[in-house]
Image 1 (cartoon, rainbow, N blue to C red):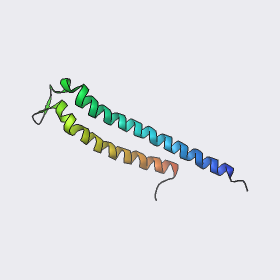
Image 2 (cartoon, one colour):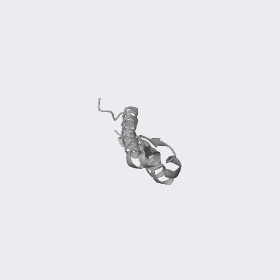
Image 3 (cartoon, rainbow, N blue to C red):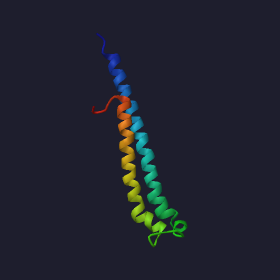
Image 4 (cartoon, one colour):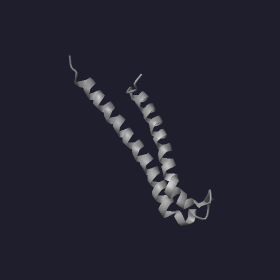
Length: 93
């Protein structure tokens, strides 16, 4: 019996899975970088015209906002990975 074809299919499936996973990571890390570096440093002066709790918005993003966004992105990643696992049959059920 030839087992080369099922092994190749499994390898292709794993490759597609990891490419999708890396794309998800790139998207989420880009968002986090944009919020932490962009809002906290690059666009700080423009954002400082607004205030949250008495603090300039640019300062808030540099100190708190990027952390909140990072935690939200963790939950988004978990949701996306659960869907991806289900799609490729790698779920734990």
